[in-house]
Image 1 (tube, helix red, strand yellow):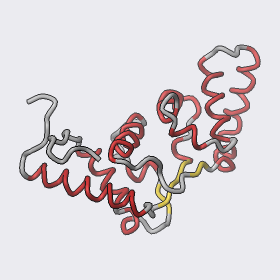
Image 2 (tube, one colour; image 1 turned 30 degrees about the vertical axis):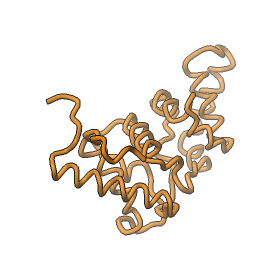
Image 3 (cartoon, rainbow, N blue to C red; image 1 turned 120 degrees about the horizontal axis):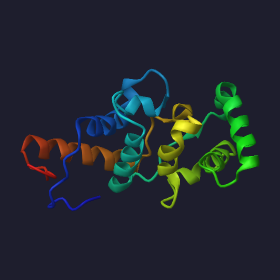
Image 4 (tube, rainbow, N blue to C red; image 1 turned 90 degrees about the vertical axis):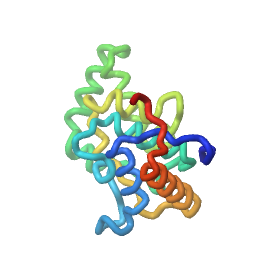
Length: 173
């Protein structure tokens, strides 16, 4: 976690809300899983997913507990899109669509670990999302690992205290 003496950076309302909702998902949703839509405000773009995961990693929460991709449902809704990307790749392996397909195929094959890699990961999701449309097919557990829950809880509490005391570091006045 960050140095408690250092000022915390200001987070937009949606960013702190997403963290708080993830922390409290167990009592806010009726099902046992959350989707990115549950923790991302509706007025935010998919870039917010990357920001959300980046903040979690800074706090010390390295992975979303139980992250799964529902490839069967995805292929049911976007099977034609997937086939069209495969056909396009056959003719031009260096195109943007071919690179998006490469990322999509890793996710479909179950390489969820790629999602967390610093060299590619979540930014590939943000970068290719308009083509492959997969964000809504991810789910993760409302049950955080005990150490993740503690770190996230401490961060949210400290953030709120700093906010109340007007003690947050601002990027601009």
